[in-house]
Structure formats: structure tokens, C-alpha cells
Length: 441
Ligand code: GAL
Image (tube, rainbow, N blue to C red):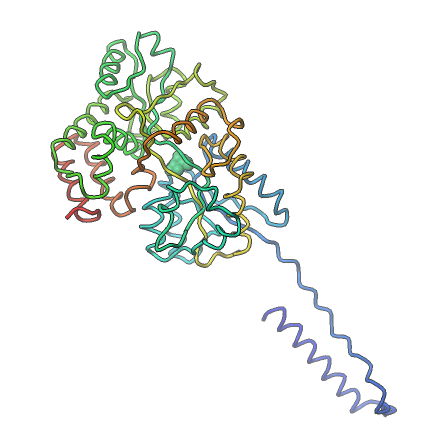
């Protein structure tokens, strides 16, 4: 029974008692017709104050990620002191675990109030396609976001003119992190091409240094996408996702050979470390290179490491002047448990204050174009410059270019390749995946 029903029932019961008392009790002086009856005071049923909550789902639990989220939650708490923030983050880089948990929750009708999703095909080809999200055009209008969000990003979060998420950042995927001292000690220049990179790694390997740090399977996919880009160049790389580049072509075969070669330089336990542990090998001087998104910079800072001294950066080889991007964005589900609180969260995620608090710590740049550059460290300032002038392409591992089913097929093929290193089989499986789930006919 609802509180309203409770109060109505109580009220009717009291009114009935009053009638019965009047009927059965001592005779009463009838009220004069002009005299208004004494007002009956309805019983006071006070509703307990309902505590507002907002449950936000992400996979930000690593150093840098966690602190970035916390910084944005502080902004949220100051603006909405009556809404309790529930952090529903599930650990695991690139959302590999979190997204499985989210899928189960959505299936069980147990949606969080908002969740982290990647701009691009992950959002449009997965959640929007499944009818799980509400459009946010009114919010964009009310907050003036169309004036401050990059024009290039809006189509990646829209379908049929409806905008479906609030991007909180821009990350760069194709970053080559390196240990400056290991490179200097071995007389190695920062490589710009894949050939230069392989020559440098041969030299390091001969000197007994682990050339390349890698971790669990999604970090192999991350390395793979940067090598596809570095080997094929911008147009052919983009064509992989639009169906104009033939996955069975000799150029793609060469890219796969390059990937296979890169794998031969990795740490012995490359299949298992989390991304943080693989990246940490570089800043501790235990490996020379790591290819990882710039959340690694947030992590290095959380370890107290110093840019340029403990870690250097460059575009992943073969793609100087190309920014392989991804964007974390928050969504409004169709039936959030706390709709108002969910909107409040989205307002903060899209605000200048929220993004300026979050991004310098997270290791990303603002999605908004009006953030104060001086709040950011040296690496992120250089990322801002690159984002403004580079050619921009999308990431596979982080949801931009392929929807979930295609990405899953690629990932399955990759898993087999990491075990058998058979380039021909890998190439056939990739070509088949593009036919069954991608745009290839
Ligand atoms: C990406 C995500 C980043 C970062 C990274 C490692 O998919 O977009 O924000 O968290 O995974 O977990």
C-alpha cells in the first residue's frame, strides 16, 4: 500500500468513527445552519524523506582512473549534496569484466542510473540498437553543449538526429610509452616507423632488455589496432571498418606479420598482467616500450612518476600525425531507478567544472573545447595540441569503429592467433568476421 493510500485509509477510518460517535453518543446540539462545521483535521502521516541516490557504473578502479572519478564526484557532491553517489565500478581494464556484468544487470532489469560507454559503434551499434537508451537532445539544448562539444564527436553519439550520451573525455589510444634512460643507455632514438621500432627492439633484445611490455588479451588487441594503423596508413585503416579495405589483401597480411613480429619482443608472461602492471614495467625500467592509451599517464602520475624523466611518449610507430581516439561517455538508460539524479550526474559529466576536475587526473583531455589548458600536465597539453591538428581515426578495442558482435569475433580470432601465431588462419578469420558482422560483402 502506498503512503498516499495509507493516509487516505486512515482518514476515512477516522471520519467513519466520527460519524459513528455522533450517531451512538450523547445527543449533540445541532449546529446552526449558518455555522460552518468545525474543520476536521486530517491525520498527519509524514512521509519519511526519500534519500536520493545515483548509481554510476564504470570500470574506473585503477590508479588515475579512480582518482579522476573521485575528483568529478566531489564536484557532483558540492552541487547535489542531497544525492548520494553510489560507485558501481567493476575492476578490469577496457571494461572487459564490467561490460559483462552490465549486460547481466540489464538483462535482469537491474539497470544502474548511468553507465560508462564508448562513443561510436559500442554505443550506437550495441546499446542504442537494443533500445536501451534515452535521447538527450533536450539536455544538450538546455546546457548549451552543442556549442562546446566537438562537431566530430556528435555524429558518433547520435542516431537519426538523436544524441545518446554525454562524452566526458577524449583519450588517445596510439601512444608509445618508453623508458628514456633505457633508450639513452642503448643508444636508441625514439622510433617513428615500424621498421625503426623493430630495429630498436632487436638492439634492446640483444642487450638483454625486455623491448616491449604487454599484458592480458585486450592489451594485445590494443597493440594490434595501433600496428594495423601504423602499417596500413589512415585511409586503408579506416577502410577496414567501412568495407573498402580487403581484410584478405596482401597489405593486411603484412600488417599481421608486423604484429606477429612485435609479439616476439614482449615480456615472457605477456598473456597475464593487467594493463597497469605491463605499463609499470616501463616506468620501473624493466621494459623499454609499452603501447597503451593515455590513461597510462594518469596511472604513472598516481605512482608519483615524473614525465620525461621516468617516461617519455610518442605516437605509436607508423602513425605520426594521426590521433587514434576514443571517448568515454555516460548514458541515460530507458528506465533509470532515479531519473532526476541520473540527469544531475549527466549535467556534471558534461560540465566544464566536472571535466576540468576529472581529466587532468584521469590522463585524458576534455571532450569540451573550452577547458583551461593550464590545468593539465605536460603530456596532456601535448595531447591537446595533437587532437587539434592531427588526423583523427577511431579505436577498435575501445568501441569506436566496430560494434560488440564484430569486436567479439575479432577477439576470438585474436585469442587463437596469440596461441598458434598462424598468420594465414588469423587473416582468414578476420576476413570472415568482417563478412559475418561487419560491412564486408
Ligand atoms: C578504456 C577506457 C579508459 C580506461 C581504459 C583502461 O576502455 O575508455 O577510460 O579506463 O579503458 O581501463
